[in-house]
Image 1 (tube, one colour):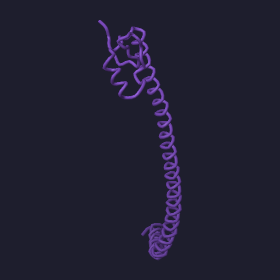
Image 2 (cartoon, one colour):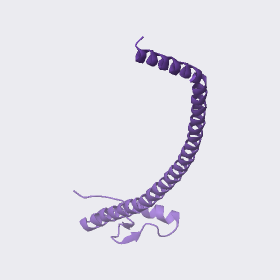
Image 3 (cartoon, rainbow, N blue to C red):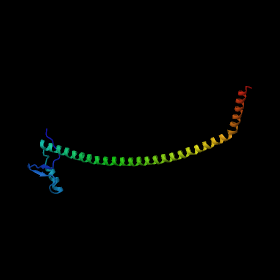
Image 4 (cartoon, rainbow, N blue to C red):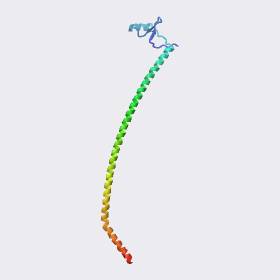
Length: 148
């Protein structure tokens, strides 16, 4: 079985190899009509196949390098944005926490003051009652001593 493929060299009917792009368009058309395709040898087919693989490998290799660099660049940008957003969030959280602590301490101080004032008022309001109870208990104690 003989393989026929497009080849840059054409074999003329006289048996000589002629370049396919030689001469004017009219000469090439005449030459194509007078020539037949030269069969490719195993070495030529292997060379074409190896060349195709090499070109494919070059394209894939260059693309993978480019893709790796772009991926690294994008990941770096995402990491940087995430870091900045996280830092900003932590800063805002610390500020709001400090503000809440200050407000809570103020409320605790106000409530402590209000509680002290309330205790004073209750103590002052109940002082006459406590004094009266103390007097009654003293009388009861005195009666118990006297035996009545």
